[in-house]
Image 1 (cartoon, rainbow, N blue to C red):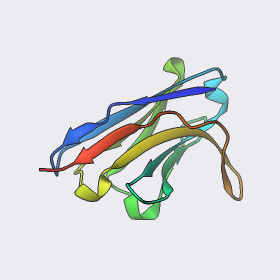
Image 2 (tube, helix red, strand yellow):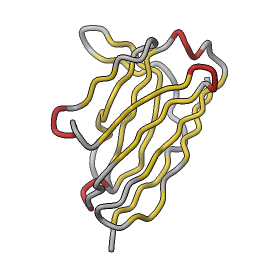
Image 3 (tube, rainbow, N blue to C red):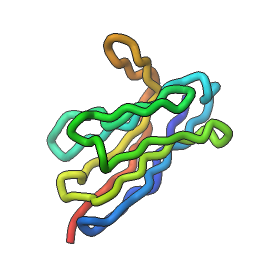
Length: 119
């Protein structure tokens, strides 16, 4: 499985971004996907998940500004982020996930995409 994230960049506070994650080497439509982020000096945290049929869920503290979606025909999962804040600065990653009692990451991490929110 190969995961390649893109769409990050330098954005002013209040701006928006749409991140993309292209997956290959798997039957994409069979897998739930997740977006994660890792801020400098911090652990990697879950942002959102989406099931194979498109049901989305979000970390409670991030609900409202983030929207996860997927296009199974393009093997791609997206993360729309609105009203960006400096604390959203992080490297953003996607991964295949298992949504059991405990969420599990199933694949090796891709390179991630850097999001920097600064004026």
